[in-house]
Length: 424
Image (cartoon, rainbow, N blue to C red; front, side, top):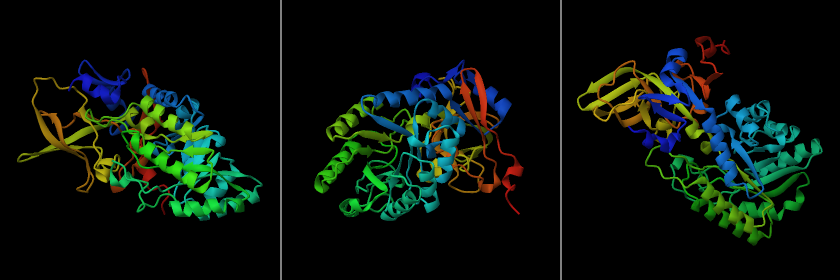
């Protein structure tokens, strides 16, 4: 596999040098020898480049960019993003506390989530966060209660369910009427009619989140048109529009994603015609998705007739996206094969006792692949470690951050004592 192919995903921060895979200036084989496998490895400078690209794409409008913490909540990653001037989009008390611990100003934190506990709402108000994205009327009553208690006016945006379909996996469509997310338009109209009843819940605008891994701008433009129609129908003039996240990344060399600068131009031009004072964006996958890889080691190679299995030490407990979403991740040998070497197709599977435990199916691998070889699973920075588990009583891997020639352990590998320290 030639370097120019993988550069679509890695943009030069992950590359082959003398047929060995490197993260920035560090050999992945050396990482395996020192830190073991499986391991998550992140490129700090790729992360910063993605943060900068996104910020530049929306530089001609007043925008609050709130990183979606659920994508990757490692404190070191959060700290880097905070230092680049971003805010945080949180969906739980844990994410709120992690964001504040990582240095984010509460005034740059947006609290979303379909099932906020009243205690989480109270904490957000006590911490004086910027705003809440409202999913139902009862949330407004809690905000009224705690806003009165703490003598605060609390900024709120109504999350709309626009009953829109988008071209993505059905598990990550979040604005169809059959999903749990958002407020339907009829109920939204009723809330706006009674807006004067709220003294502490200050409804300033709308929040939309139409799905994840969206590859073009047209669904967002369609959603904004629906928002504009709602505003005209109700006479409500939103000061704020939060278009959520969902911006796609390439997971393979075949993926075609609209350039983020072009995306930004189209979105901001429409928002500016709506008279909006502030645009909020909640990128997660775009920021961290391709800045991380999962390093894993081959345990066994099993050949069953024409079917080949490469059994590795990383499983669905480490990376559940393929099992959960049938997601594709590019998988590469750490030692680059030459053009003269033969290849075979194999399923890359883990050690978990589930048929769904695979990292990739029909993946092209070197014909002579053997136990002890190392593989890289690409695009593992978002919704990867953050969705990991201890299923089968397996230990969560370590997380490593590479900055040029420097390696930092930003999460230590778990020990077996960690599995039961809170039991009995």
